Image (cartoon, one colour):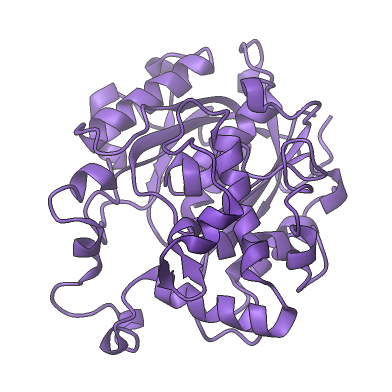
Length: 395
């Protein structure tokens, strides 16, 4: 039985699918997107004829090669969908925004079953010029780069290094503590046959890795890859009789209380994740202590620190102590974290891979990495100036 929430239990997830994931697969973004979409549709016990809504992020814009695998209309045309509702765009609650908007659509009766997807093929797109080639903008600089590019700060690694340093200064976070995020991800990836990197990672390996933008080193950065993820968001009534137990969207976090900026918040040890998290908890009677598994954005390890802080799994500024030896965030810990390896080891599926893993965990289908008795999952996606969150349950 749902605990109420913004949709009164009317919005559920009924299926999830993922394409092949890997480095330089040399497959088109549309090909990967269709594979994930068809798998999600089949997982829900549906056919393309049943899908009457579609949503995706970020729309047709593409800030770097391979950042967008396919657009909504590409997929609609390829699958022959007749859509009663559709959307795509970047100005939303980060990459998970289309899931939230799909939940609103089915709760209002605008559609019965919405296909929501996110796809990337960055590894293949960047194969000819190496990773650095995509960081040099052409033509007029985007507004946020006008003040950082003259200093060579073209990458989110540079932009995030500054608040990471500030958090370390204010709250005592150490590199060894930060390293537990990467080590935990790699350990969990060892149980995920689809993960990009599965070899063990030690603290010595982490500390010895080359510095990218202090304090962020190589293993603090996610892995560009090729892959696509899709979920089916359904109205509860429309989900009756489907093979999967529907996962209730208990609450959503969509808040943005300050300017959308990387470096101008009132408290520089917080980010947009804190605004999204605040609205998530406002809309539900569930509390952080009710969460059985957390899938939190790790485009960089420090973003996961931000989400742990924002969602209240520990006191503000106390994340270092919370992750000190990695035991609390391990598969058998108090708060199993990024159980498929996240983006640091599983591959950069831009947040939607984390949602896929949350669904798999709640359906008890995660194999060797399954968290026993998982009934409530928190998903936090995005970093820096934008963020969005979901709370899912089996109830």
